[in-house]
Image (cartoon, rainbow, N blue to C red):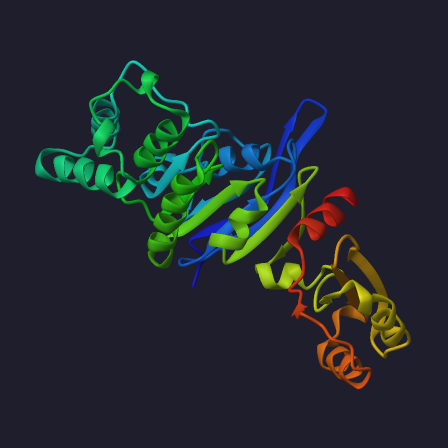
Length: 314
């Protein structure tokens, strides 16, 4: 069975500069893929090629069995695209914009009216439907951009920085919407926000200098962090020296760092060799030494550390 989205050797050069350098990946229905990278990594260029707005120098993108270069209209029927910055016609109202998009997509009659009403309700823009887009807040403009992307209920959603400019409540609403749609669609979120991956993505690809440098579930990527299975210990300042002494030489611990040493309560982190499980040994050794602790917590790993490591090494 073919994948809903297949990218093979996708490359884009601008003169002597290679923005995207032979990337390969595939995405299936039900996946929410975070497409991560620092500014200038090639994320937006890649998304523009996938959606057919920019021709590749080489390689290809196949959407639901249709090659973007050969069948661009078939592809665009199946894709909803929120571009970077969500460019909009600011002299239109959201109602007029969605009507225009519906017309372009060939939606007519009751189906057209129902799609506009359903989308406005789903993205929570009903209160501003007849207000000029140019007068809307950045958050509302972003929501209008998402509305035009989902109007035709596409099989594949490509969202470039979908929560950019939104306040925490608006971010929550957009992420809830993504989670609601996830089971029935392919959703690709191009972002530099690691929290986006942690909250909504089932998988993440990290790109740097136009190349893929990591690909896996959030848990798989966190496992590459030096903090994976590390143990954070919160304890009274008076117990600090004794705790450090007890942890010295414990099998599987490579080092112990003091995170906070201010005030009556301090925190230590014991790092595990090769991400091994050390919490049971740490708990046992502290009990044996009668070290009174307030909290012991196992770290999952930190995406920000993995992100820095793989992008700086590229």
